[in-house]
Image 1 (tube, rainbow, N blue to C red):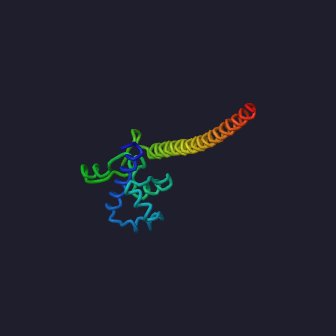
Image 2: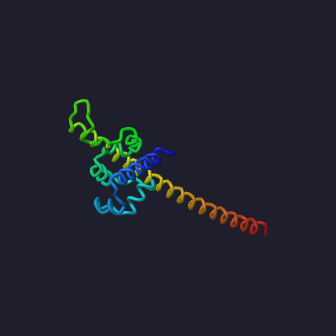
Image 3: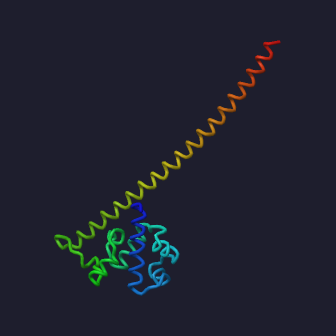
Length: 162
């Protein structure tokens, strides 16, 4: 499983678990968070990852840090402890909620940067594909020109032979 697919899988598994733990249907969660039922289903089934704004909604609603939604197996934590720690229960070395908020912001910023890098890479791939298509068209044109020149050369040789 690739890293991005692993994140999708963990996120989807966690989302489904948290929704069911709150005894909510897809429709119920959709209605509360104003996110389409099909989008939530896609997230739960690891078909896609939501944007940061949507992840923030899930994080706030379920009171779970964003990092844990992506990187922790919340079902295993629940099985071992019988509870899910929330943002409020997490203590930094200083025990300051401002530190937690700062760490969350850093994480969101990192995700935004990675998203921008991904979009940039996708644009580069599109440009390379277009360049390749352009080169292929140029090669076809050159081949046609070569054939035309060969024909002209044959015709010229026939004229000179007379």
